Picture (cartoon, rainbow, N blue to C red):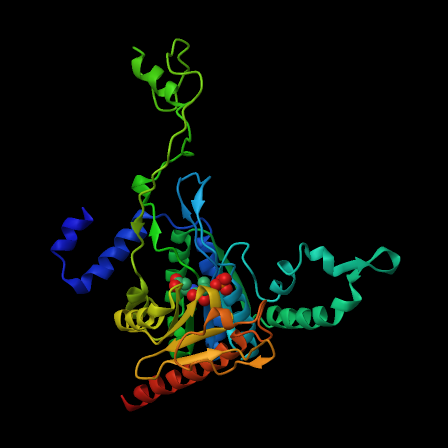
Amino acid sequence: MLSDIQSETPPENLAALAETHYFAANPPPKDLEKHVALARDFIDYHSAKGKRLVLITSGGTTVPLEKQTVRFIDNFSAGTRGATSAEYFLEAGYAVLFLHRQFSLLPFSRHYSHATDCFLDFLREGPDGSVVARDEDAAKMLHVLRKYRDARDRNMLLLLPFVSISDYLHELRSVAQLMRPLGPRGLLYLAAAVSDFFVPPDRMSEHKIQSTDAADALKKSTATSTRPTTDEEETFDNFDSSPAVPRSKSLVIDLDPVPKFLKNLVEGWSPQGMIVSFKLETNPAILVHKAKYSLDRYQHHLVIGNLLSTRKWEVVFVSPGSQDRWIRVPFRKDGVESSAPVADEPVDPNSLPDGEPEVEIESLIIPAVQDLHSKYIWTVEEKERGA
Ligand code: PAZ
């Protein structure tokens, strides 16, 4: 049992033990090898050119309730932060490896995929039966299209999807390990909304969880039969006395905590890369405290804190040895300029204008991260020169 081994293991080995156990027990996604090959080529290509490369994680992870998954637990994340950040990182000259939840927002296409009821709203019939952009959308679409084509043509953007929490962790570990040759030029920007709880495979039902007792009769009949039966070999009991109307069952879900692998990432998977994690809270009173706690526990380089209700308006940078730094988009409400709310506290959500900010906050976050990354590279290289 893992718990027996844990009680005899020195604390420094516990993270390694949890890693071995988790990755052995939770099978990798079926495309992992294919993704690893794509990521290796992409990373080697940019590493050879001495380029900076950012791994962005984006979107939410699912928690399957069944092995043949019909039902799963999900979260709110649409991948806006990750997809938007990817565009600004490309603009800043980074190669971008975009590890995202399948069907969540993608860089560039995000401007169209979720912007109206349907992307076809941006199109109209042109002359000779062709399809063209609507006049009012054409200029912006051309601009976005050129940037997208440029990123793909110069091999600056690689998209890799995941779905479940275990897919995500397998992909993250493999890609982070491949980033080692980049040294400090590798940046890990962890914006995905990763589940904290999961159903371990040994407690997961193989088949769809039943919501009524209608199928129980199958089991009863096989259990009373004199002939040996297998699980698959199930027959109806015509003399079953159970009620004609199947009874509904309530479902109690018992979730385990997902092991925290940030320490493994910092110390083992990508020891030289700069690691930026995000911390999401809903209670403003605990945001900065939780961000500091995370930094202290995992000893990485930057935590970007954000609140669910205000995440498009402000974030806070928490990094070792520096003052907390709030980054806010400028905004006006009822004609009043509110670009300087109480500097070191979360803004009151009621003081924000309705709708979306005019400026994307990622346009302010990425230059600030880039600046810290430059300092990080310089410090690591100085140390190497001195050694
Ligand atoms: O995907 P999105 O733009 O809707 O949300 C972004 C976010 C809030 C998931 C991200 O900024 C973040 O905080 N990620 C980390 C979440 C966490 O604490 O695990």
